[in-house]
Image (cartoon, rainbow, N blue to C red; front, top):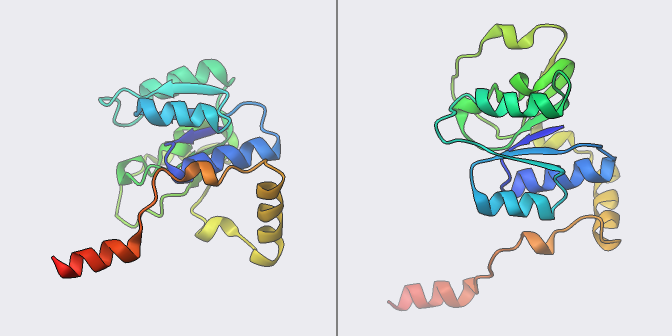
Length: 168
């Protein structure tokens, strides 16, 4: 599978893929820091995206060498509207492209990307069923398979922050 973007959402998708038993988890990312985090969270292959590769064509060619013909699944997690169709570019025929960012802008999509039974979804809350999924998620966290504490980059004492802001 391919994960485009390794922010908080992308890191959790990497973890979910690992828990689900994905053999190969390729991450496309522009930030060196996030590339390192992706590795720590379970990515098997890391591709640094060139900032001038606006439609990820160069990145796709690098993925193509790792995945014969494309990924079974690809997830777009960047929040960049122009990349809304990027997961379609990364998946094989009959693969599933998942646009996670919740892009609500109008974008142009090359309809050729949909050829050969590709599936494109934009799921609300990951198609979660809380009664079934939350106990599983809690179990994965408790047994150490799901890193949540490691997602916290800093803590802010919000009450003292707000109190100080009102005084100043």
